[in-house]
Image 1 (cartoon, helix red, strand yellow):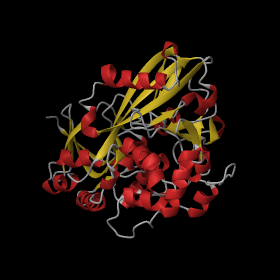
Image 2 (cartoon, rainbow, N blue to C red):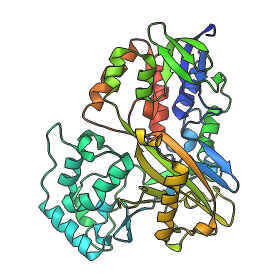
Image 3 (tube, rainbow, N blue to C red):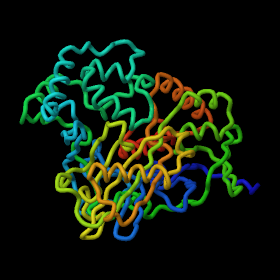
Image 4 (cartoon, helix red, strand yellow):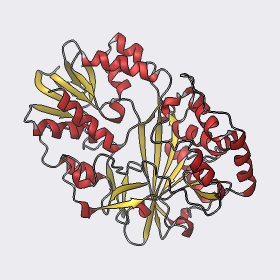
Amino acid sequence: MGSLQKISALVLGGGISGLAAARTLQEQQRDFLLLERCPTVGGLTRTVEVGEFCFDYTGHFLHLCRYATPEDIPYASLKNDEWGQISRRSCCFVGGKLITAPIQYNLAELPHDLFTQCVESYNRRSSVPDRENGTFRDFIVGGFGQALADLFLIPQNEKTMAISLDRLSKHAVRRFFPAPDEKLVRQGMTAGASTGAKSYNSTFWYPKTGGIGRLVNGLRAGLSGCALNQDVIAVNLQDRTVRTSTQGVFGWDTMFSSIPLKSLCQMTGDQELLRASADLSHSSTVSFNIGVRGSLRAEFADIHWLYIPDRDIPFYRVGFYSNIGQGTCAPGYSSLYVEVGLLSEEVDQANLVHDLQPKVMKSLEELGWIDCRNVTCVVIHVMQHAYVHHTPQRDSAVATILARLRGAAVYPIGRYGLWDYTSMEDSMESARTAVLEAR
């Protein structure tokens, strides 16, 4: 085992929340060190260049609520003229048609028989249950009716999160899920009517060239104190030390961790944390990034992503990089990403190249969405942690874990550090807030 290196503030993980924490510490002129397990920083907000293409680790878009423009994001050193603000167009593939998302506000676009079923079911719906132990399924059926729930809302969310909605709490419903607003639902039943409904991602920002990695590059620029290829394998809360796979040992006065909360708890060996973290679960996402010669199908020309609820189709979403940012591929080419949701334990067992990829490509070709003869490359990205599950046990488990960690001056940050579903902006802000509050 190596000799102990004592650091005033230790940051675990070099994704955008870890980088934001490090930049805040550096601005405060505090002694700090960031440990990142990979050869480069960025976490899931990375972009890789492959031939004529820039592929992100699936769709990562900058939704801003606290800040007006990318230039306003602390420490990122972004320039607005290098980013475009995009008005989202997303659709749901239902009944063989592309229905404007969110589908619950655009029912008039459905084929007539499905429209009739959804309207009649909506009129017969019971109210959303008030009970504290209500499930996500209860919320959906009570809010939108059984027909729309069965047609789209239940299978789409279960494919995405790889879990039955009966196991998720109604508290999983937050600003990211369109609400059962009766005025908007009724308005969307009229053909040609525009609800004008705005959701958290009605508009988003994306780099004009280079992919979402531009955000990481901005946060990383001028940052000292980053140690790469440092895979943390053990955390000792009593001694306030961490050990890496290269036998490095680092001590902390204060630690900010963006490591997924369940993994962090397991690294400690602490019995209280192990018991609490046993109640935490999540899904994984496998993203197939596909580069093709030529243009996308004409009907996809201005669509940014599609939701696919059909359980016979292996993927839950298809996004079109080249529609989101023309600088993501060379002229004469197009690019897309295809997402498959799996339980976390299924990812290690899946044969991605010889089993899952052929199924994905076959489905895309059968749908007529690509011609495999025009595919020039496929790059697979695996997100071991994609969606945390807001089960009834999640809130109490996280509260117990955070209190225990706080006693050792450990402050989880970011989407997975806090075991939550948040935007990129929220993740960065959680890190900045944690550092400022821990002074």
